[in-house]
Length: 68
Image (cartoon, rainbow, N blue to C red; front, side, top):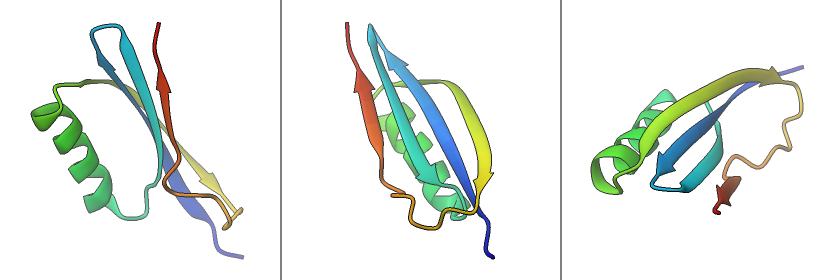
């Protein structure tokens, strides 16, 4: 059974916290997301988590925004 690697990125700008979950097998896509979010959109990367999962049906474009 194939195992996939995922990453959860935590970004912050002012009081806005943005959490994005991505399929981390494509390292270039993860780095491009960080670059765009930090250099263009002005967010600060405040953390990340990595994990491995056998569930291949996971949606790799899940995105969450938390605002106060």
